[in-house]
Length: 295
Length: 318
Image 1 (cartoon, each protein chain N blue to C red):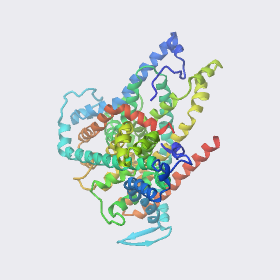
Image 2: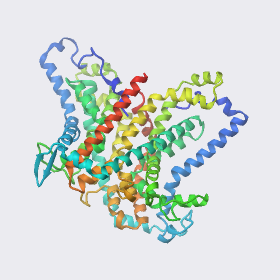
Image 3: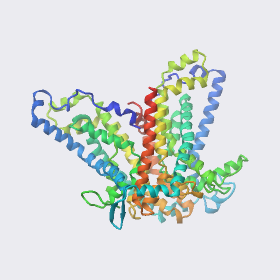
Image 4: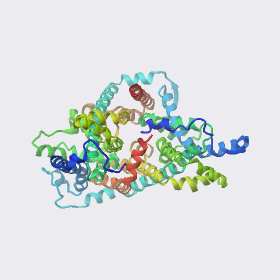
């Protein structure tokens, strides 16, 4: 994100600082700040407070802005009836494993493609990037068939965390981000490490990785949020109630559970990603834009 | 999002295959073999994962679409799966719905983020706050956000969030997901709210790369705000606009979780069924994985058609 160093945009600064321009600017800014708060934060407020209301209060017209008699019963019910602790733990476990596998295998692959450059490296990179063009929905059925009977090995990965961890590694976008960052690390550093007798692994560990903290952060956040937000894949490969992720668990219970309890569970499921976002928002936003723009 | 940048990543021709073989050692065959083996050892983990979970399923999907498995026996059936899928009336409904959703999502989810980005780019205050707000819904698990819309926003009674707002403004209320006409717009509104943050941030970054002198020159020539947007902003962001349009078409045409949660799958009078939902239904409820694979191949062909048209159009303009 470029800082707003006062560079000229659509309307000049001078125009915004004087007379009528200034009035319009502040009026518009106020409208936008209030409007955006209502549009983007409003529904979340409604969600959090709605789950604090009783079944009667939520059905009354007009709806009340503040819960008259806030009760945490819905949240307690959601936590206990849906076994949210278990669901959250599962999701966390899948996300952490996916992160670990991606950090190790994708970083190693990107390092090989960027610095070691073995024969056919570019062909492999091309085949990896080609998967970006294939819509996820197209692959869902053959991927599922593959997971229930892995070719050659004939293993069934249903209800095994590997069914989430290993497909997560096949993430061309993250490999591409890492490779491009490694490409920007000067070759001279590699040559110097070689002169000192460092092995490729040692060079990766002691030179490349410490320099790559920003990009590793971005990739980590993408890896974790992708698992946390995913729905259809975990729904298919984790069919047992004991192995479900939190989104799938809430969906599975949504039919026979009072709606306020479902909403309370949805709030609890959203808290971890919202916290991650608020802590790492700078990294997320810079990763999002560097990944797509500066080609 | 990486599609435009792929070309820039190829290593320049004439570069040595590896930085390691410097000097006379380069001629040593044993050394070369060892370097390559090390390189492939680093690659092998990711390559295995791509092989099992991306490359192989791709081929398997095409193969499956020409086979039929009954009671564990697999036979080749030619185009039978395609014939069966296309003969199903819900096939055409699903495609009609999918195109309609994509069109609405483009009108709303493509134009609105661009306008929002232009607006945010003019502000000198509260920029960080506004950016966080726009991106916040993107971070919610989609299931959470959609339950919020399903139970609170689209409650067809007067207690629903949208209906109480409409009522307060003295506008007619709506049945939302229970009315076949409103099903699609309601799903598009929810989907746009959940997803527009990413596009806004990418547009913002693109807008910040426009040189200020262009606006200055346009202003000196007497161009008003609209003409400056028309003749400076849009041409300067044309590439990223076109790229995001294509990515969005490909992404929205696969919409699945919106009908599943908001409309319990098919919605009132089949008004919500999407092609992706049909794939799911065939594969996992009707025990017809082969038909689902055929549907997937059809979807791939249609989306590849869009991508090819995009590449053609964008290369023509350059």
